[in-house]
Image 1 (cartoon, rainbow, N blue to C red):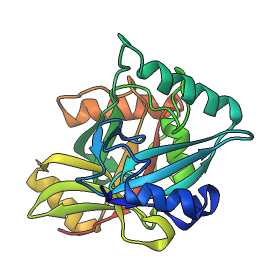
Image 2: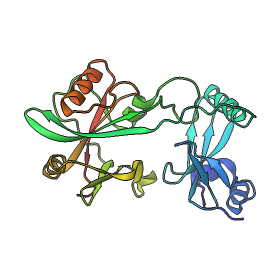
Image 3: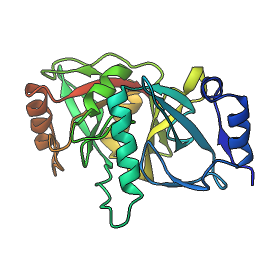
Length: 257
């Protein structure tokens, strides 16, 4: 049966019109799949699905992702990375294979004092290492991936980080809904992180966001911040992560209030 599949021009150019048309008709497309971005199940017969083509020097692997996670695109990777991904996929399909821990982005809101003024902040820390799409292994590419998107590495929190245009924080009815990133080719923004349920924020946080019309986003690798029960402890953890070279940040405009 036909699939709700997005095949970008770049992917079509790589795989050819005939193969692309077969995919769209549902001939070579699995109904259910594990999203190559968030690693949770998807169903191309029920929800928009992106084709993501990983291309190495000699090998290409077609993967699938929720359209809300990734746009359809071609991703250049090394042959070694691609072969590792193929071995991982093959192993995952074998009997009795252990499923690796799925990283979840933990998001904490708090007020951060910078140059005598309180700023609304979101602190993002995954629950497990984040690998670059198409790679395997124990490395953690969370910060390098964000730096490539325009986030700035910090060694100290002394001034407000630059605004990262194209990214934004979605607030609606006084609750936090999502962090949005630019869509492909200038399209509509897509959710980089989305709350399962809208997150409550304090009146003080919302007032600061309304005043500055932006939110500071800090991100650190797993194990750098932890769940801090108070804002002073959160600030200490942020300062410690920055001093250790494990913190990136950007100012994100509000998408609503």
